[in-house]
Amino acid sequence: MKAGGALVLTADAREAARRAAGEARASLGGLSPTFAVLFASAHFFGSAQDLVTAVAEETGQIPLIGCVAEAVAGGAREVESGPAVALWLAAGLGPVETFGMEFVRTPTGGAYGGYRFGPGPAGVHLMICDPFTFPVAELLAHLNSRVPGAWVMGGLASGGLRLRQSRLFLDGRVLPGGAVGAHLPRAEVHPLVAQGCRPVGDPYTITRAEASMIFELGGRPPLVRLRELAATLPGRDTELLARGVQLGLVIDEYRAEPRQGDFLIRGVAGADPDSGAITVGEAVEVGQTVQFHVRDADSADEDLRRTLERESTALAGRRAAGALLFTCNGRGSRLFTEPDHDAGLVAEMLGEIPVAGFFCAGEIGPVGGQNYLHAFTASIALFPDVVP
Image (tube, rainbow, N blue to C red; front, top):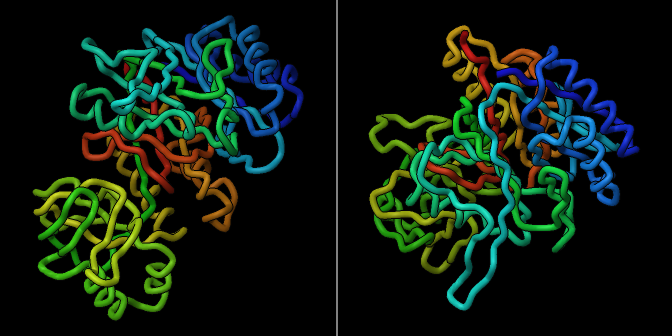
């Protein structure tokens, strides 16, 4: 597999397409691309169709997905202001099937249409979804239970502020809602998910819960446990806890001492001061092990570094050919003091490989063998070089 990428900083759609396609194709070294991923800043909201049409003309009408986003990444850079287009081309991935999906509400709930995750080689699915019209979390739950082995990587488009303002790219078309995706049944893709949190205090076993509400942790109300924790933490961690409590659900209950990266992170969405119960953004069960977490720039940096270090070891001398980066729009300059943090760290740890990405309103990636929708996460689809 070989990838090529380009980041172009211009607001002219046709000029951006011409330059991006030329630079990305040049980095393929003469190979013909068979798949394209295109991300454009919000400056291209009104000219999205012109951009997609021009890119399709320049690349030869190959399968393409992408979106308009709040901000984009290309190579080791993240462009959070000003016009930018990131184009990523790939050759040697094997078959690529692009698809569009929609969600239709019905009297009994709703139905997904446009594409069927069926039998056969499951492989990896890249998906970009409109946050207003496509409830992807429910689809991921369905895949986890009904289509094991179907991994999903991607994110929620962040370029629109309200219903029907998203701009999703599918081959030569621009869609205002639903979801677009690409099925790569034979491509080798390593999913990397860094959730950017750090555990504090001790782990607890859930001893009483219903759905997403926890009534007892180790026999005591969660709010009591939180007050006890706050009284023992250093000042900085107490401040972070006050800004927003996160709860980590242990992924592997057989691990003796779970550490950072061993949890599925979910925010504490509410609390009942009378009973001391809390509500989290995930269904929980009695017997699960959980631990409170805090989030800050240092924790996010540490988590992503550890994730990339593990991947570098797993590659065992192979090089990374390219990557797609789906990072939260709450990261970037909103979280880190230095620019280009996530894209720059990928380049630092894995080399200056072709990378394209966008700042998402929610990130999709597998944790512990299950697909999830995340927040404040860097989700990376990494494509290793194929060993001859």
